[in-house]
Image 1 (tube, rainbow, N blue to C red):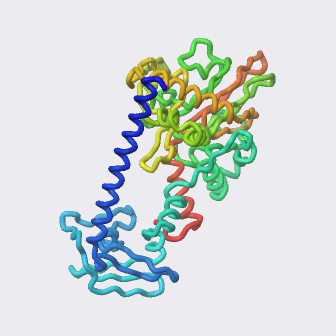
Image 2: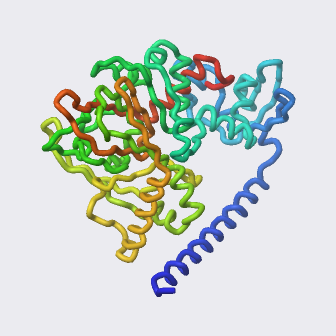
Image 3: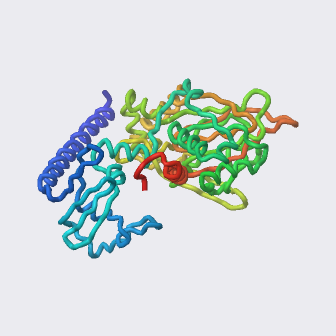
Length: 418
């Protein structure tokens, strides 16, 4: 084993021991803290034959009366300067649908039982809330399963039906990919879909952008040559969440075929089969860069972030990948350069191994998760009577998740949501 490999291996073991020590200390601290909590810090209720415990301080903080909560703003308005961190119930009265609590300061609170159960502290209920209200569960896919996971939705049905809108957004959230068919032959048709969700995300390319061959361009996506797989705009700190590409004109000859790869699948595969390379791609910051002129305005965008971004639970929240838009500055130590390049190349190769090929038709809107799915395109050739043209727009995930929750309330798909 080389000296560098020995160092990296030893350093990795030290970090693991350090993390284990911290984890043990946190566990002991948590156990001691919980040991000090008293039974009178909770109210225990039977809801639908299930015994549930609710902390007094949480109940008092979430009182739904007009003094504490504004019903139309859906916002807490209690005065925190006067908030008691140790409230005690003096009377608890439960009926068929609600529970009324009188506190030791004389304040009275009422809670709907469905509302309480939906927010209860059992792992099962917390998991249900997270998966049904916070964000739908993502399901990863291999390119060979693309036809199964890429659901097809009708343009007019999405515009006219909340159920159709919900189904499209739910599928998009789950798989990171969906196809809208039968779109009118109009450069403004995409606006109707975007407006059904919320509004477009403006970038230095505008609210919408046209994808077709431009010789003197500031973006390699506007060339007819082969476009390597990438995520759009990784140089934005707050990167646009979804990409919507309306195919107005598709090339009639060979080429112009989309390449799509679910990088959650790629990343999970690496975590299992190539853990050291996975670790490098989650910990090494990369400088993403774009410089140019668009709509007469200069831009010089820089953002630093790993290829694979994880949250506090170790779940993937964002993928950054673009060979053209990766800057020349390497922010990490020199000894990490070659190992990182090897890990980066492995990620690229695996993504190609797991890729799906799909050629959109005129009237299709291909919608995909821009911070999850790598996309690219084969080379094509325009001809005088056949010039490939797409209209694109971005919509943020915040707006999509918001719309999904609103539809759950409107369609009464879940009790106790608000």
